[in-house]
Length: 352
Image (tube, rainbow, N blue to C red; front, side, top):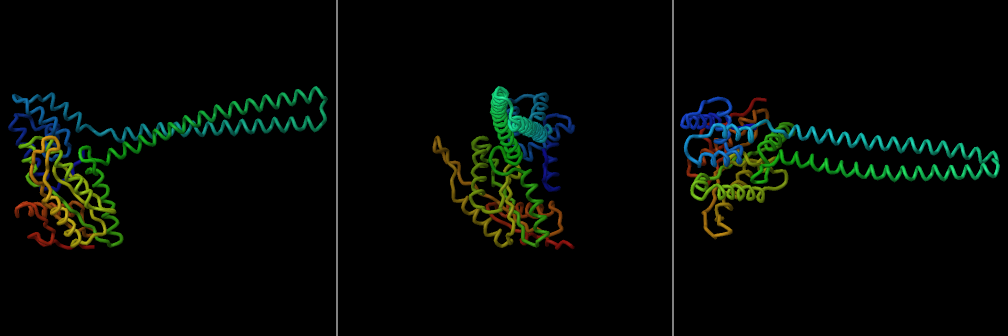
């Protein structure tokens, strides 16, 4: 698990983690701290569900179960091992194909040499009986070559199918590593890599790059009032709404918990503000209802902060300005957009 919070937010989450461990009488060791830090950051949705289920049972906390949850959700990810394993199998299959091709080449060379020898014998005018034997030998070798060719064709087909399956598996592993399991949009890992790419491109060609950082207003209310399944539905609705309202190279991603980000390459800040307002306003008009009971859960609103990238600055500073805009939007009453130009502290230009 990797965390990309700003220093201020990381400090706040850390304090929450320490307070919870103190409440539960748990030692503040690295394992417990990571588990509760991840819980309050919302970086691992399934971990939160597992912890909530454990806490709902009441009584003293089962630390062994918490350790199991840590191993299950926070152990070092095996994506790299899976990629390495599949790549190794692909290499083996390719080696087999090359080996089969070498066998074919050797067979063809041998068959060609035999035909050359037989043609010499026939040209020298072998006796009638000998000619018959030569023809039979040619037919026999031809049949053997055909049989070996058919066997090789089957091997190549099997290897080709294996390679296709392995390539698909490799693509799925890579896709899973870049996708948020709950909402289906890009996850923090994809966001982090893409942000670095776009920042490097903007620094090189001087194009504009903006970032939207959004937070679902009163998200805890949905979870506390209606349960986590409704909270999950809210997250999915917001993810789809963001996806439906961006285009081209824009990338919406889940940032963690109830926060989402949108990377806007080649976008001026005034256009980013316009888009953010459209996203906010459209979502606020919708009401979330149960498809089963028809129960209305109310509207979902967003607070959004916007920042503009300065070539040469640290990405953490770029994200921090959007984060500050987001928190100002919260302070001003939520369901609004605040861009970096509206922050109390002036944004200094980065020296080249």
